[in-house]
Image (cartoon, rainbow, N blue to C red; front, side, top):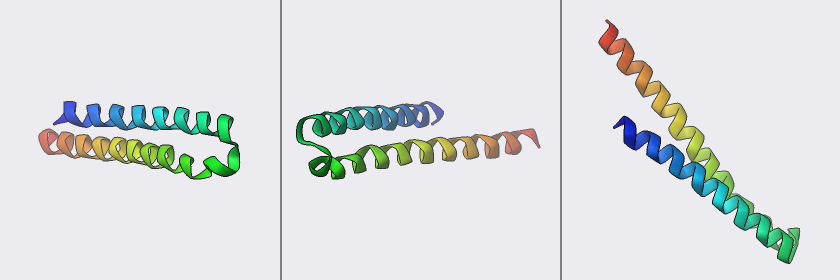
Length: 69
């Protein structure tokens, strides 16, 4: 389970980076006005990355407390 959680964290980080690069490409080619909505994708992917990381750390702490007691 821990390997899958870490994989998904890296997956969302890669999606955030890739979509940010795509959004930057659209900004360069079409200007800010046409590409404003493109920045939603990296924002959501970055939020998913931090949510998954926070959740994994919480679950690891709960597991440690469970085995430590």
